[in-house]
Amino acid sequence: MNNYDAQNIDQRKKLADSMTELLLSKGFSEEEQFYEKENVFSLEVTSRTFLSVFSTIENGLCRPYGRDSIKICALYVSRTGELKGFLKSRRINRSGTIDQIIDRLDQRTDTLFQKAKRIERCSRCGGIKLLSKKNNLYCSELCWKRTDRSENDQRPKVFIGGLVPIPSSSIGKGLTDQEVGQSNPEIARKQG
Ligand SMILES: [Zn+2]
Image (cartoon, rainbow, N blue to C red; front, side):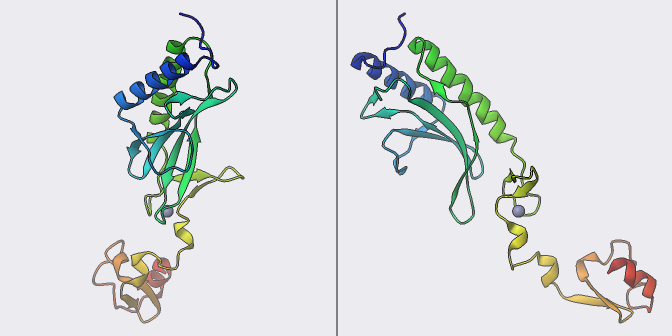
């Protein structure tokens, strides 16, 4: 088989059809709401995360430009509905034969799917964790900044020995019923 020719209209159609067939067979569906001109295919990975393939297909044909490339990225939908990209694969150049290009697309979507599946989640709100510029993982939902603090803080508080208020949920963790309500500054300090 000859190498793919980005100027040949029959080959542009054949590559577009082969890509569409592959992606649909892998469970991707074609997006209708992206603002891109090219066809975008998406596949759900886990809750709120999915892969998107930016195919370079426009009106049933791959774009004619040789240097253009197919892109795959993993996206997260935040609680406010914002899309955040968190992983991307190396660009897939449309070079070599059509079969080779399709193989590359097949393998890279699989690899990125597995990586996206393992993304670390925030133990508090379930949002994905991203790497900051300083290389620290942080929750993409910025949940620690919210004013609606954890439910612990909203529960009625009890007082130990009339000294320090502690959340009622922490009673029973290291404190016996007997100790609660006794005047015991040591315990109060440890718990507070
Ligand atoms: Zn969080």
